[in-house]
Amino acid sequence: MDWLHNLIWHDLVWHNDKLFGIQWSVWKVIGWLGNITFSSRFIVQWYATERKRRVVVPTAFWWLSLVGSLLLLVYALRKTDSVFIYAYLFPWIPYTRNLIIHYRHQKAHSNCPGCGRSCPPQSNFCPNCGARLATTTSSF
Ligand SMILES: [Zn+2]
Image (cartoon, rainbow, N blue to C red):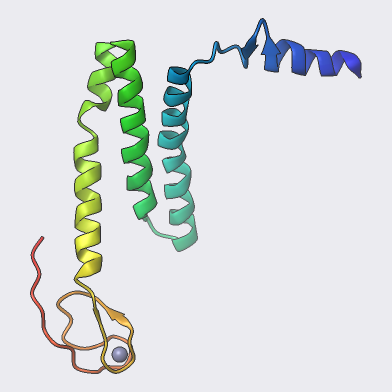
């Protein structure tokens, strides 16, 4: 089995001072962290959708999108690749806006004075116990 160990370890994993065929540097680590973070958002979104049996975009999806795209933008700026820079120059805007709207919406919830459950914004009655809620107004 030494031949298998040699094939996997010495030819595929570590070869000519390269790990997985990549010459590593700090910038490669930043770029790969961006790639892994950005692509992991698909798994998070898919898992949330399968779990709820309906299309769901969890908050973690927007955080992974924001952090991953910013890491990739930093890497692209370092590489001075105009195509790559443009691809990651603007996506942080909708990701950030979606997070702002999400947290504002969450903050606009009120706790029921009867049962303590968190009630959706602009609800007049608690969906859990039916207690009357103080009406509030919110803007997005
Ligand atoms: Zn209640």
